[in-house]
Amino acid sequence: MIDSLNALMATILFGQDEVFTHEDGDTTPPTIRHFNATQIRAYLTRVNAPVLTFQFDERLYEHLVRKQGVEERKVTRLMERPDIYAQPVLVAFFGDKHLIIDGSHRLVIQWRMGLREFKGYPVPQEIWERFLVDLPTDDPEFTDYALGRNQGNGN
Image (cartoon, rainbow, N blue to C red; front, side):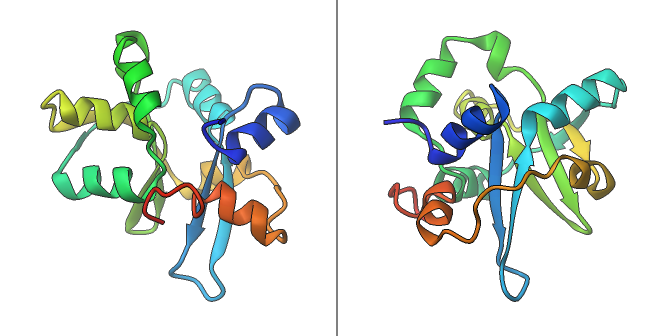
């Protein structure tokens, strides 16, 4: 089985780009956004955006494992690739809130290695808004799958 329908749709629609889907439950009705993480990372790299150090606590670790679709087989695969799991993650900011939009599996690995800080690109709203993509949010089955509701990951 593929990691997620979200990744499959991104590959079909955007080549090899990875897209992260998030449902903002703080809005009425909930807002569903699809972030093109590949293009955001490419942009931040191209403009030499700063990489910051963020604190990592158990609450974030638990959230990643329960709510962001972390898959153990992908964690296992990435454990063998320090060149990948050491890459900075993408941290999108929404006012006073933040969201990991790329790097959840890497952070799980780092937490399990005992690290309590991680490197990440801060991605302000004026940047991530430019890299949102349209995917079929009007299809409840697709939306449930993209958000991991039928994958048994705690959503």
